[in-house]
Length: 421
Ligand SMILES: *Cc1c(COP(=O)(O)O)cnc(C)c1O
Image (cartoon, rainbow, N blue to C red; front, side, top):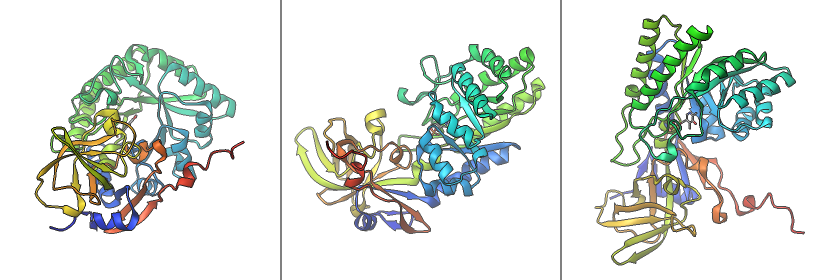
């Protein structure tokens, strides 16, 4: 029957050569997806920029791809900024997001002269203004608006609406704009919204866009403020299983751009620069994770548990979001799926279940399981729980695999401990 081939590489062979658990990223797929989203956006509007949400997957190699493909970079922490800076990523193309930036993160970002901060509260605007004045810099900012719209996704992936921690409510935006206008070291470029993640269509984006466009018009009339930049966030969904039916990317983007153009034309408003920030759309389907089956245990009337050598530490998403995945047995690819199996992680947590009740061929100890669509928010969320090392990332380019991020060693895990006293 043969083995599962992922972008030109035999997955069972990769497992043998590089060990498991193993993240495998197809750089070809990532580049194809970058070009698909970027060209769709570029073709539909004259002044737009696509940023990659680096929190979805970040490595030195990925940063190189993002730069060479001409994307901007969203960071949400000093750690992500550190790598961008270490690799000399163009600072003017970096946007710093997040609802809780520290003084030292703000200082580092100003020192590197990043393109913009996306501000999440009036207090943060004032803090950035103060630090910018102290270091003699001018901070360019966007204000993150909470448009009050809820997308249809897991509640832990919602980032807009009445209960979210993110953004400034529409009713406070005029105050925020006035605050910016009074701060010498703050240059307000415009507004940002991000309604949520893993959305199957753009209905929430369009509803949010209507709120933002209304706001832009009101600020023009009431404060004479011209919005130069409108950032419409990310959240474009991918198919983890057959049950997910995300709209094609152009069906997300074109109607959004269309709405902006119509509104600006019919209200006599200057057309802002537009930004989108895909993360999962680019990284998710570009990656898989390989595991070795260490135990097969049948609990009669309950499940056949196939225990693997990874789980929660390399993929906490099932536990966090009840995320569903699809998988194949890489060394039994194409064999009839005759068993219903629950793929269990190795952590001492009952919640450490990667996939519940999936149909697979007969599973045995030593088989290689490939969990699909793990390129986003898996490596970037990895932990050392139960002192498991973070797996290596093997990158595939043109059918040729290479180690892109080496596997953590046990010594790495304890490298920060002081010698015992
Ligand atoms: C996480 C995030 C994104 C990317 O979301 P995806 O669902 O991965 O596309 C974009 N913008 C902001 C502000 C985010 O926090």
